[in-house]
Image (tube, rainbow, N blue to C red; front, top):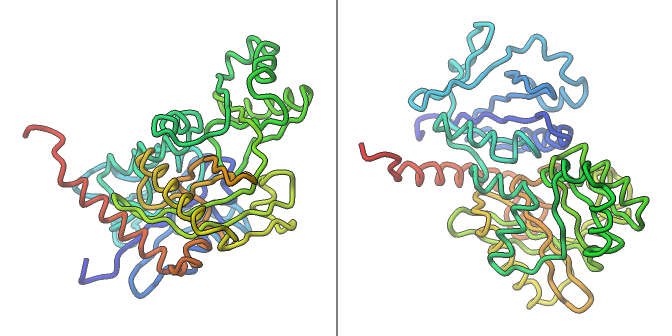
Length: 367
């Protein structure tokens, strides 16, 4: 790899409700990545799940995938000894579709949940971010909470149930939520991010609406107690020896940090670093690293907390592939901690190669 630039494939778009967020994240990375070190090729995935070589995120943001008809549709060859992409129509790709590294920027299902990571593992491909287990645990809010509780990390009261059970007995589940969680409460699809499908319910009517919305997005729903407190986030970077950033604080323009509040200019603001006493900063950083290790994350994650007026810290969730848009908290936190955006991309690529090389040391059979 010393004799040539590292060939990076930037993959973005995807089938999830966070498709547009992915495009914006990819656009920022594509602009900032060091072209003296990396040759970058792009693959955009449309909402139907088709992969197109050479489409640019900024073009897709502007025109959609309608103009991608001229770009070859591609697929990954699952040959661990010859990692490459091929065009389905037989066209020749640059460098015959070969590459050194994949940088996935796919938020949500089929990108952040371990499915793409499993595909890349099958092809023996080095890539940025968490592996299959870390990604899947980080995506599923129910299973995430189970491993957090195993590590005795402090969580809000919550209840999980399946869509099929709710549809059979909706009144029973509404009553159970009211008895165990109360109002107000948050209703969330278990396997989405960026606040997609999340509602805050203040009464039974709003709860039913929230449940009906959440069950359109996932077969599993998590209902959480409302915690009154400041919203604090910490970025984590690393593999076996992760480091935590300075914390940042979200001041949402809406009642909670909704999809619109995260990705639209409607008055939400960030305080970076968050104005906090040093002992709270250290507790947040330590807990963020504990959460990171609990789900076996690697590369990067953003860990979200609530801080009450009594300085009680409540762990909310971990995001193993947080937004990389220009207004995203994760890169801003590291910039405030001393790692600027382009260097952060370098770190993530280096960490991806390190994780890949470490995995190559492990036998998978006796032969």
